[in-house]
Image 1 (tube, one colour):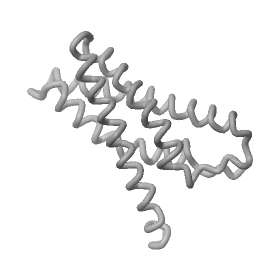
Image 2: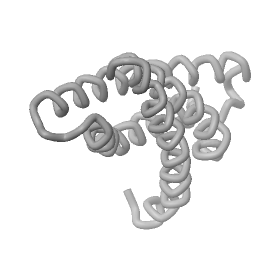
Image 3: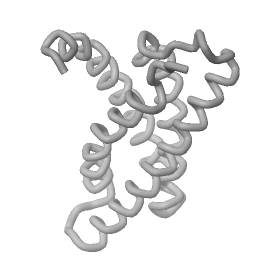
Image 4: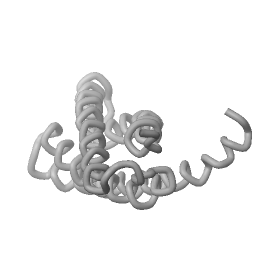
Length: 141
């Protein structure tokens, strides 16, 4: 990858960080609120669902909008395909993050909020790469 191509990616990365921050605030607030009533797996599912819906819509229309090219795919099918792929990413993230939080709470002195933050920070670059390369990629078909 050339230096010029790397520079062109900076605005997308910055938009990604902004959207992830917004989604994470929604996710964390839902986790804290749900945690008053439910255990970690249920709280995490509710939180990830709220954050994912926020993230999908913002990523779709703000972060990766310049990348996505629906010209070769009917608009509704393109949206459904992206939403389905994002849902699979959400499911992967929920499983990994819930397992990570539970493990950290059980095996370390960390509380559930510090554990959640630690796990989520590790998932950010993985999610970015998956979204950039597979979910919101340019379609060449």
